[in-house]
Every structure is written in structure tokens, then in C-alpha cells.
Length: 108
Image (cartoon, rainbow, N blue to C red; front, side, top):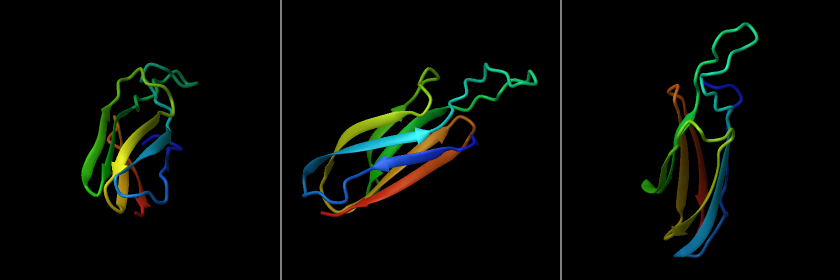
């Protein structure tokens, strides 16, 4: 598990039924490639966020596969239609097996 990983999401507190809203996500993550060495000359293990998903009330909204060239602290902004009140669940998957989650509710 990478140190200091912190997911952040921005979701409006409320929306009208059928309204398209903008969701913003950022995860603080070093995105180590596995090619750098520490001060002792040891290879720093690879640790890259390789997948991001967002679900609304259990239904998938977006599913992104990321490649090793993605930058540190990946940021995503995307639109979603809100059919009803519920909860958005955001999930980031790390190469090292770690999973980071954040949830935000929205009222209609």
C-alpha cells in the first residue's frame, strides 16, 4: 500500500431527477513505476493506480483502465445523469492489491 494515499471527490449535494451533473475526483498517489531506486540503491516497488470505477446505487457509471504512463495524483472529471436520490461509490485499484474507496450521497 502506498503511503499518504487520499481520495477526494466532489459531488453536488442535490440535483433534480434526470439532471446531468459533473463529478470530480482526485487521488493523491505517488504512482511509482518500479524503475526508480531509493537512496540505498534498492528498487522502489511498482505501485500504480491501474483502474478507476464509479457506481451509482450499484450501477456502473464509468470504468477506466489506466496505463503506467498516467501522471501522479490522477484527476478525473466526468458527467453523470442522476435519476433518483442515492449514493455514488468511487473505487481506485492499485497494482499492489490495495483498493481505495470513497462514497458521496446526493439528494433529489
